[in-house]
Amino acid sequence: MRLSGKRAVVTGGASGFGAGIVRRFRAEGAAVMIADLDRSGADALAAEVDAHAHATDVSVSSDMAALAEASIAALGGIDIFVNNAGITHRPMPMETVDEADFDRVLAVNAKSVYLSAVHIVPHMKRAGQGVVLNIASTAGVSPRPNLNWYNASKGWMITATKAMAVELAPARIRVNALNPVAGETPLLKSFMGEDTPEMRAKFLATIPLGRFSTPDDLGAAAAFLCSDDASMITGVAMEIDGGRCI
Image 1 (cartoon, rainbow, N blue to C red):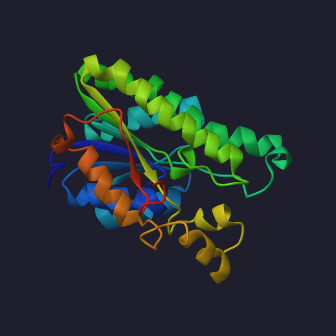
Image 2 (cartoon, rainbow, N blue to C red):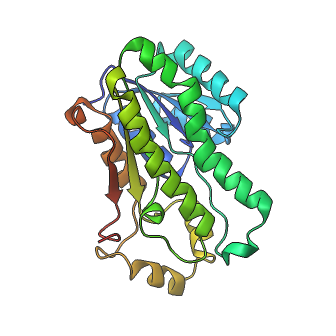
């Protein structure tokens, strides 16, 4: 119950890593708002774990403003905000990625962090405390070929995390990131291009511990970094990668 009494918002919380974080946060005692484009999925998980749900496009300022208002109304405040929602383009040479796909990747993976600063950070400043957790990727540390603009968006997120941590420390707001390796989530097929035994073996060969990351792995790490046990940790991009970046 490390998060007892905490109020958390998790974007992209209806599935994948986000759902793992939501489940662990609830198990640790936090009240949770699940924000997702997939409202039906968010509603289903909210009913399962006794949480709240809100339909949100994290790349749209008005949606993020509405999420902040809805979360404060439902939870009474926001102590923890998890920027988990993310997308990728399919593997291909960098110059062949469609401009619309590039714009969408940067809007969801990077602009969303900016919008969380615009619409969530002021509430945390007024409260005199808070935790922001950005879900980045090992792709931002050790890029894979043919995922160039996804790699770049996650590298941006890691740098943004460190910059936010330095600026927000005087306001007693901690900012950290998690860098998962490819995991058993709906995005796995997009990363690999095709989900075949051969392609899985190729990806697993780059992970010393020999398995993909799981939603439970991310949930456990997120619960620690967002708890008071990590009260002296800020500006960290923790790799949840089975040794991938060694």
